[in-house]
Amino acid sequence: MNFDNKIEIDKIQVLKLFMEHEKERKELDCFAIEIIGKLCNANHLKYHKCTITSNGLTNIVLPWHCHCNIDLIPKGGLKMMESIKKFREKANQNPEAICIRKVLDMYNQIEKDFDYSFLLLSNDNEAVHAGHYNNHEGSPLYIANGFHRLLAVGLHYAEKNIFKSFEIYYAQK
Image (cartoon, rainbow, N blue to C red; front, side, top):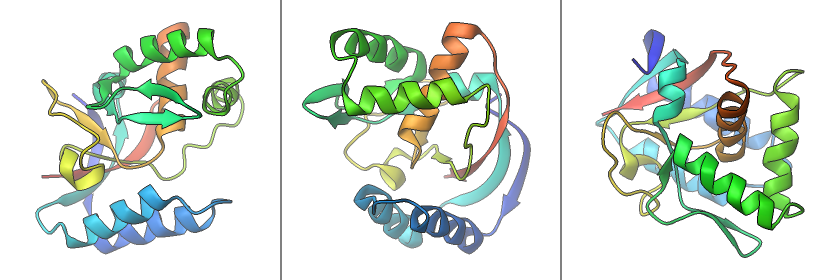
């Protein structure tokens, strides 16, 4: 089971929270703005607020991600545990790369005061990062935002076998 405490909520409420979250960022995230626009037009989704389980965490598929000439996650995306293997490989090769440092800094904050603020997942890969995902087997959860935070949480879980559940929003087709 991917979630506990799943409660249906209004689409407008979720999109407002997403927009408020993005306004708080230091820099505008063009991908997030594009995703918000797609979700505004995606009338086939139902929205929920829920608590993600450790099983749900392992079902997260991270999208293609390339920073600083480092192809961290290949095109088509990878499930969480495969993403962690790829991250470790890239971190060993490029320990000072900005993206690697960002994930590791977040990883170091998890047991202190980690920011779990607004995170949105969906089972509809086209509604979130169209073109970044292949279809994945099982019960995949595709991320709309929070790539670095979710990778840090997955890395923490894989390395320390400690999972603290947290609230997320879920757009379900």
